[in-house]
Image 1 (cartoon, rainbow, N blue to C red):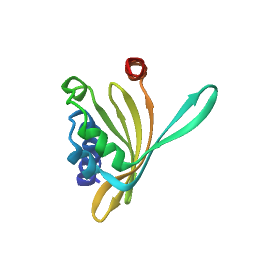
Image 2: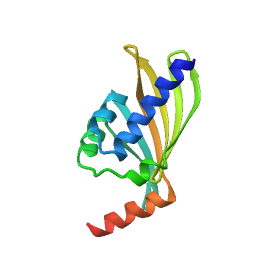
Image 3: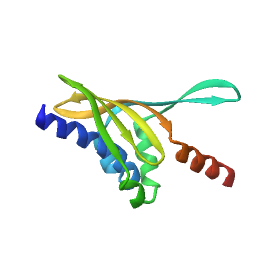
Image 4: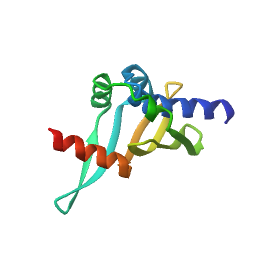
Length: 132
């Protein structure tokens, strides 16, 4: 799995580093067009499943500013890989992602992401919402 391990990790890092480096090209390269990125949010006592598409992620990366401090704190761990599928965990200052990848047309692409805010990320998100 040696070379595949590097390719899997590269796809995961293109996704998360693409976000923090404000590089929509890197993010788009990592994502399958039918990506399903989801978070469970409790809103007024009710759990809600919120989804983000690959198109929205790429557009959001275009409007960000690079965060060099966050880039230095990204952790990436391959949890499992078998054949043409893999599961990766990324941890960064704002989020923890569980990422499912599949080999698609010879390249590793992110198909699914289930994510959650870190405590610091939740504080930053709440502060940003109060400023609006």
